[in-house]
Length: 240
Ligand SMILES: C[S@@+](CC[C@H](N)C(=O)[O-])C[C@H]1O[C@@H](n2cnc3c(N)ncnc32)[C@H](O)[C@@H]1O
Image (cartoon, rainbow, N blue to C red):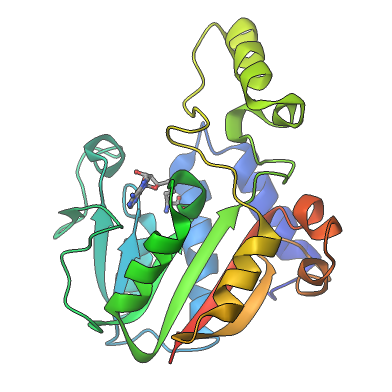
């Protein structure tokens, strides 16, 4: 599927709507899509790819299917075992402090993790540290002002995290999975772009909306609007 294109976005959106009932389909599709995005810049065969915060391993499995040496690092045993068994060789580890030597990875990959860490810059620095010069860093996240920024409480997070959480509880009878300040942190597009552009250890290869069918790069260039319209920022960086 062409990326970006209406067909691709519609297919991803339909899969996402069924994420709760058919997670394997939704995450399998997203993993194939992300792997294709990486391969636009670097063929994966025989490459070392580390997936940080990779959950139950859909992405790692896709990288392996494409001939890469895929390694999964995930700090939450529940996420890791969400499908029964974790992928072979998965490591219980925190992205802030990876049990890896400098420059071992051809690709350091992280999908939808940055908004779940309190200190995204330190998290990014650790990703950069383990990537070899010339290697790629793939990082995507849902920013706070995105219509999906509040995750399961969205779009009510626009009225405040506390209100959105209370509303979720009233409506469902359950606590929301995410609590702002504990496992979900407001992160914004503008400061993140300024941060990565200001670093001297990476160059920005691609900064775009991950899911938009058109104007995927253009939308991230407009201050203010980009915070609401990007939905999910995809950054592909090259280690200098
Ligand atoms: C929304 S899930 C994303 C899972 C998968 N990468 C995906 O795109 O479907 C967020 C993941 O980030 C992980 N995570 C949270 N804090 C982390 C940290 N400090 N280091 C590494 N992973 C972390 C969580 O355990 C969880 O698996």
